[in-house]
Image (cartoon, rainbow, N blue to C red; front, top):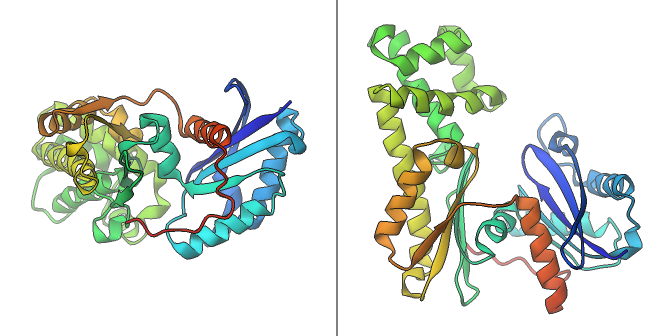
Length: 322
């Protein structure tokens, strides 16, 4: 049976999805992305072929029948990285075109059909877009260390921890902020804990997952610090979308789509509707769509479209598009 593969190789999971040439899903295989990183968080691309063949075996598929592979991966952010990823996936040895792109591209394909603007707000944040001329661009995503992951889980968490520091410094009392009280109680925060966190916050993924939820709850209770964080987050994510749309001159097109993606953007009952309202107010020609499928589905759709259109990106050269 002939098939295509779509891979979502994000920061937390490595998901391989197979579909027939008619688009019917055959099955999927998922493993932890940590298998692709060494102890120093360096991406070990040499393990890619091993995992892909594990997936094929689990799904009962013959590698000779694969007709197209599209992988959206985190870490494809520069010409050198693109070359390294291309080489790693070429070593799988499949007898078909193989395309590796940044994971924002398959998410854009999943949410907007490959054209329009997608803002991703998860652990980090970034926006990607493409217009009807095929011109594409990205905005943000340079990392929270330079305040470029604005509106992300990390950004929200670090801003919340600033207010926790006010409590530890004796500037505010614990009873003055529901948000600060939630954080202190949940993580048993003291001066040592906050010092360790601020010096190595990437080693606290569970904190980054929980704090945005606490901000939502505290916001609903009228906490002033949570309100400030929420307004900043909505403004930042709205801006990522409009900045990307403006670069592509999408306001001049007959119509276009915009979408918000990621746990922070979609799980909060306050962020998505407010960002949507900002976009709809600025662009009369926009359709703001809620994602209806996952990133791996976007990779499958891209593979099928490229296959049916006879597009082979195997020898593509990376183009800087920021």
